[in-house]
Length: 347
Image 1 (cartoon, rainbow, N blue to C red):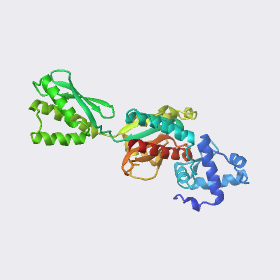
Image 2 (cartoon, rainbow, N blue to C red):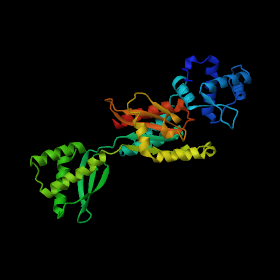
Image 3 (cartoon, rainbow, N blue to C red):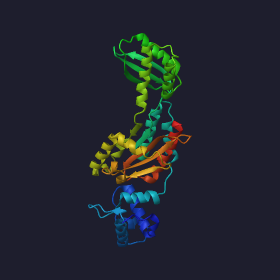
């Protein structure tokens, strides 16, 4: 039987369903009819509540674990709740300040991203995730350090103070003078350009014989840029923080699920693909449990929001991952706010 829209449920069924879901998200344990009759103010007997819960179970919205007489929402039920019943709670002033403070450092962008992700993890009690394209630095200085007769270390210093190293293979018979000539040329000619801009400039200058480089130094220049350009084409950067928060008080009851989730977090390529699928939407995406085959075994949920620059470009995705028993009403707006904060940082 297909799941009915929320408006097709009776008022009584909606009330019971909402109480079961909210209680389960709060406690992590199945909810019984007697508990509902005591806390809900519905003025219904436990027997009447049991009948309603049975109807909701037949609709696929609730399930009864074999070890308990209570009910808990299914993934389908959680989807119906998140899409049709949830009332979001905006982050408090303290939570907003904590996220903004971690994003506002003066260090490299990657450090700010990691700090912001850690803050989101702490506030949401989930693991924080952020996916950003491989950062293409603006060049400030380039150097070559000989390592052996056939290898050298190419050192790139970005305008933001970042430093990256790559090992390159040297052409046969090259001398230290060619290394210094190549480094001087790149630092003087390419400063202020991105890698892609620098590559276009070098190809044009060498093709038109406008540089004073000899053939050996020209080869070094080309090889030095190539190793960075190739690396920049690889998969985006995925930062994960707060995995330990997934081992909460209820984790001891289901260690297999927690182990499975931690194993899934090790497979960053799969997580990156899932987050990347949220790039095209405007709104926050919520992936619940078995809706995504990646988390079908661990029973986990992911909340993700694209990060957009001022011109509308998607510059990353931010989110959290945790058990399906998340406080969606609190965490979804928190992810929204973090995405907005990162958009200002990455713009």
